[in-house]
Image (cartoon, rainbow, N blue to C red; front, side, top):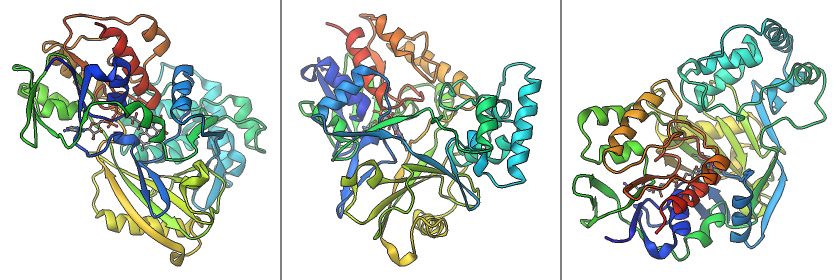
Length: 456
Ligand SMILES: Cc1cc2nc3c(=O)[nH]c(=O)nc-3n(C[C@H](O)[C@H](O)[C@H](O)COP(=O)(O)OP(=O)(O)OC[C@H]3O[C@@H](n4cnc5c(N)ncnc54)[C@H](O)[C@@H]3O)c2cc1C
């Protein structure tokens, strides 16, 4: 096939096709709809994204593209985030809001933090656990982010590296923590301040126009790829050949379905990712709390992060109701031991216990969705395993990039110097194909970048 073949019609695939010009591309997608992780469902008047999605991009190009895609109809507001800990509501980030932490825990958190900052010696932290203790002191680290790490990242913080942290974790000043232990700080300290969300249509509204003229072959699930023969085989029996291939499927899936040798297959299985059970609960009363989303630290609760969909846009739920979306994470480190129905039922009880749903009778509906690929886990195996897989792919037509092992991309640098190679025949794009900590803006920019490297 002469066209550029794109595997997967999630945002990275859509963006690649859009920027390369749709007429040059054909996409193969296993679902009967586009969007992948940014797909939005509409049920009984409620709008449900696949887990909470908001745009907080700093990239002007993406901001303008998203704005244009929704004809300027988006909502922009300061984000309100909260923390729930053993019956206490603590503003976010908790480390600079210790005033809301109960005593004697508050005092211990503050004292440990000050002791740690005074000692401030030693080598840079090698594990996320060390980073947390270095940033916050032992008591706070152990009670809050380490516990949350086991729920969200599904493993102990000591099993994680620090290369993904960047500005995603707030590194507080002594002054902020000390003042925040007495009273709320006047200024917001969360790394996401203003967020944008489409006024209607859910998060997918940002991408609908991008996919309009795309050549998408839906219901095409890849079951085998032969890099030797440059051929793709699909579950529906069709076979196509390719000369240029853009893969957006999870890298472990691509390798597992390929003719890679056993050692490369083994490396791909060492790439760890969490899966997500989204529990969507509709209740017959307005939201009880003002926060857009809430982090739950209690390890005896499945509920990990909560968002109220009608606070993202009032059009996401019928008036007078609330759509509560709860995330529950699993992985090879933390396999699920109960059915989705049982977990959903426990989540509903937790929401009632936390006071977010007024009573069990207030629940109008509950439905769940299993998302097999959620967050790349930045454990200590990741870099070496990824390196081995990319090295093998480089013998099949991939060009290694100087930052391809880094979880985060510096787009200013990358877009200023797009490196093309006419012999390159295999390209990777997106969060799971590149095995990175990518947000939606990164997926859009990767498509733009490919259009610059894949000229002609
Ligand atoms: C819970 C959660 C919350 C998030 N919140 C935010 C947020 O607030 N803001 C933000 O900017 N980003 C957020 N993200 C990140 C964002 O969702 C991703 O970066 C982005 O959607 C990834 O797009 P992608 O195209 O790389 O992958 P995907 O969306 O996974 O696309 C891959 C496509 O490949 C298809 N596919 C898979 N296997 C096959 C096969 N065998 N054959 C054919 N097709 C196949 C899939 O169906 C899918 O359509 C969040 C992610 C998660 C999981």
